[in-house]
Image (cartoon, rainbow, N blue to C red; front, side, top):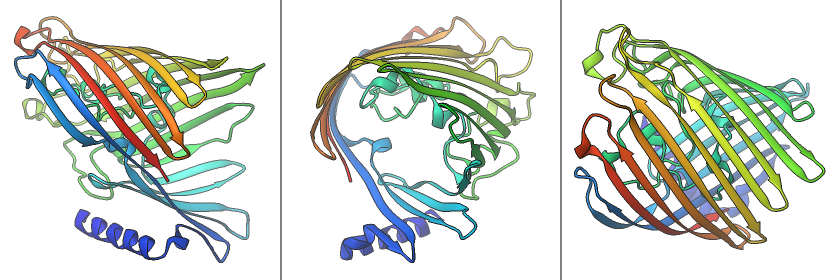
Length: 372
């Protein structure tokens, strides 16, 4: 299936190169558009952990910020707005794809994309131009000391059981005086593009809901968001040690706030994952996280810093595993669609069970991003 998708995408790109006019065209009133981005950076890191390579250098594609979007939109005679999008990621092929139907009653999405919580999140890193926070792996329950902070998981801070890009149906209301709500339903978090679904992995029947408020008062911008999800943990959950066991249901929530004023941006986020997916009748705790960020815009230059903390006790033994990171970055817009950036992050992970798995690391990146 993926080979077919990749082959189809390659043909589409070849056609685009041969006929640039197709990139933004009207066909019988319908609108077809191609857009995208590309981001490469040089990274150097220094790690003290026993299970991580000490120092490393590489040039790397920034995965979440490097993809091509194919969009189609039209309006039916009865006023129904409809369309579709395919997001093709350079490193892995088709990442998201969905159909959408809308009107003055809101928009319904049907396909593979972020859920009602992830897609509307506000967090401390929201104020940073690049968001150089490598928090994704840790919040999925993995120990930071097993990797070297390569900056690739920077989309957002995740919740265990969150649906990610799994196949779903999603509804979002219009904005009423800055206020909107959204809800999504995902039958199986391990199923994407009709493949990978099973009865014994991931979470089933995941329901996500969120409310968001965005407004401006006398030059001060305000954004508020709260979201929660619930899902049924399956007996396998990706870990053979718990196969067939009775697991806790997935109940998690997060909230965030952001303020803009006089060139400054300040944001904070908090989330709690409870004991979802844990073995029942144990001391397992999937943890919580919070972060805080601040940035300032000097016309084409934006500078910012953010702090992040998370803790969990996935095995229910010993003390909590903890992660603290602090990052500083600068982003400069050279021209329309072209920017360059640099950042440094300091991270400390503390494994509550095994001291040898602790790690202190410093990571520096400098990169260039284009959008088109």
